[in-house]
Image 1 (tube, rainbow, N blue to C red):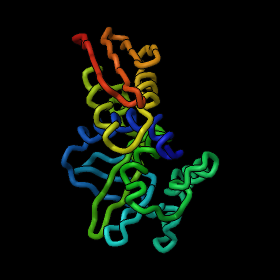
Image 2: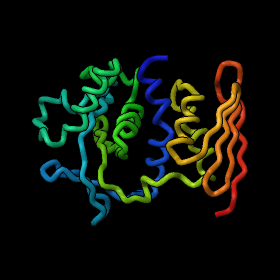
Image 3: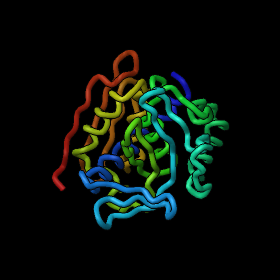
Length: 221
């Protein structure tokens, strides 16, 4: 397992949980980016500050980091997060964060944006356009988007996360439950979590350390 996957294992589930909540907030509203003001607007008046992450090219099947997109003359103020992520990648030896272009079959925009959002505690948005897509970090979202997920959603988030790429399942589960405020107990072949509201979750692992079974007892809120 490479360094990218190890870091994703620690943050992808909580990042995914925020994405689900952010998607519920924005729904199917149209979007528009104003690079001059550094904002994205959904619908008529749902507006947030942004940082530019990068772009996917359908033709080249590559990801290009915003800090490497010198042709577009992007405002330096909108590249601070991407530049920080590059420095983080250098420190932690994650080439997908430091190389200007990344083949999409190595890591696509969603995985890189999930990691970026996970490391910065933010959400991201994928805006499709002719020939590809632009990925943005979205800042100053409502507290409801950043709040821990309800216990009944935890199983769905974990199940979704493990299907996205190769991950360390024990790290994934332990990190997610801890980040979401659960009391966590680890054993040789299982991780158990207790939510402050009384709900309980037990995840059992097979001999290869992969999730074999998830059992949950959800208390009504």
